[in-house]
Amino acid sequence: MVDHKQYAYRVIWSDEDAEFVGLCAEFPSLSHLAPNQSDALEGIVTLVGEIVADMAANGEAVPEPLSGKRYSGKFQVRVPPEQHRNLAIKAAEQGISLNRLVSSLLTA
Image (tube, one colour):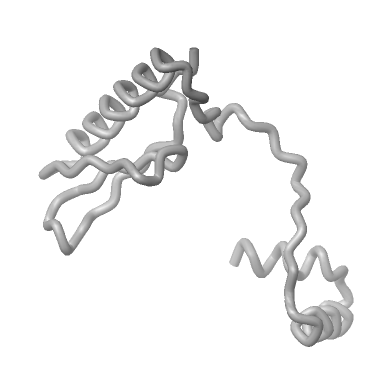
């Protein structure tokens, strides 16, 4: 069984709700509101734990935690041909590969 504590959690402030919101990347439809960060985190972790237990009890597939996935470091992105051309020119002007240019732009 999946350990629900291994999921990717975060807490953000919601101006609209005037409270902190606990979120889980693997369960984007779930959230938990609380007046402070620690309660928001505790609330979403508890909620996800209940959902995971319910899914497992009903034989449903439980999402794999992002922390357990292995990434190759490669992915494809489709861009319009003109944008591809412009990026290739910019990379050539800087004397670097297109891959290095795009990687630096993604991390900027």
